[in-house]
Image (cartoon, rainbow, N blue to C red; front, side, top):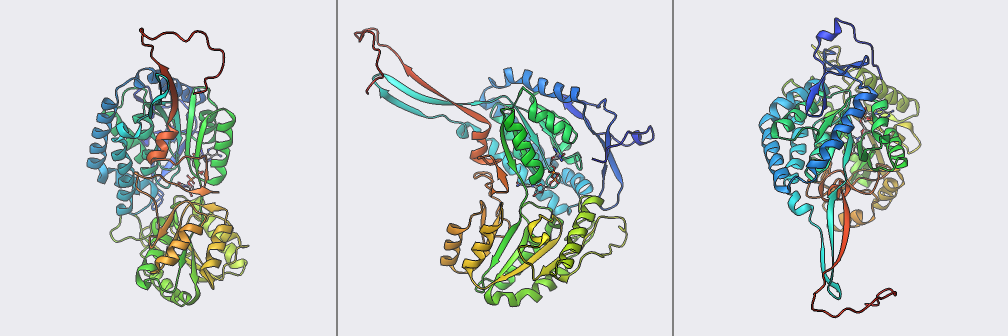
Length: 509
Ligand code: NAD
């Protein structure tokens, strides 16, 4: 975890605060980690690994706040969200700058990160209709049945480094607008933009204890998954950690959803619009330095479309690798030196295993940012399903190319891959697209769309190896996740009615 004991000199760097019971507080821990600009290695801040007592205090603060927050009228909760979305919109450029500095992605992409979270906030303002119950009149003589959608209590959220604005905003706004209270554990690699959003939530009027934040790694996550007062855990991150969180939380009786790793294929049919398709592949393969869970990581060319491959390589070659805040940058650095070493190791493994390296980004030079964690766009062809580069989520700017003779074989290839986050098909044939959407076993399908992430009126619906738990992280599904259904069966006696006497059998009507 690279946590160290802070020296006095190091403490002059700003420290990231915990949020407990409405107060931004300095952790008492001795374990800290640097938050580092991945383009320059400048230390931006130091983040604490909260102590067990601090995590417990945050959960207890959320538990105490739940008693009043759950009874706060829907209109009051929604008005806070309306104010919050206006504040986030107003502060988007400032937050995007912080995000680029700590995460590395380009400034326009960082604004997109905030904006996709803002869309969830806007949707949270509709909770009045999203959280409605159901009613059936007269299910038996004078008996009505109806449901209440009630909040469940303290919910916890654990988020990854790659979308430090959007993914926290997938979680706590929907949870709290439904009447729950929340403990958030942001990524320890880039917590600053998340904290800027949290501060705006306080400014919008989120009451004391309704939203709490603790920082840290495995110990903090495990404490959230096992604490007796936590009722639900929402996790987004890698498959290994997500599986651990799902098991641990479930064993301790929590409702858990884990959105995890991916290997997303894009199928290219020969009748596709060539220019649009190649632009989409380059953008979705290399954008955000390939560090998106919905990045295109395998392009599958069907039949004659493989002749377009040299053009794809040329397009990728023209992408500009630079620090994210520099104008016209296409690809920023990867998050850390360790991440860079991991991706370089995988590229090396691909070469050893016999894949053809059509474009090699390993030795990219970025003048002025020689210390940055840069990797240029990299393309492999002649990839087989047994290779490590195919089996592993690379999470860097590396695109694999495979070729198959038919659409049926492309569908079979994707369906054999264990992940199910996203997939795309590029074609001008409605019949081919319709066959594809029906037969492909992946939860989010794009038709001439490379990154098919649904808007929040729907839900994020990754499937198979990319997801554990039934319900998605936003949209209507998350309202189900953050509420429990209570069914009420009620009979009101008419004083004038004659009593039927004691009945000891199950009613037959
Ligand atoms: P990660 O799994 O390393 O970290 C995610 C969170 O888990 C962080 O808050 C981290 O502190 C915590 N954590 C790390 N190690 C832990 C451990 N051993 N025990 C308990 N908690 C631990 O993921 P990451 O590298 O931050 O993010 C990249 C991954 O997230 C990729 O696999 C990507 O595909 C995935 N992701 C998935 C989605 C999706 O919706 N499916 C979205 C974004 C990212």
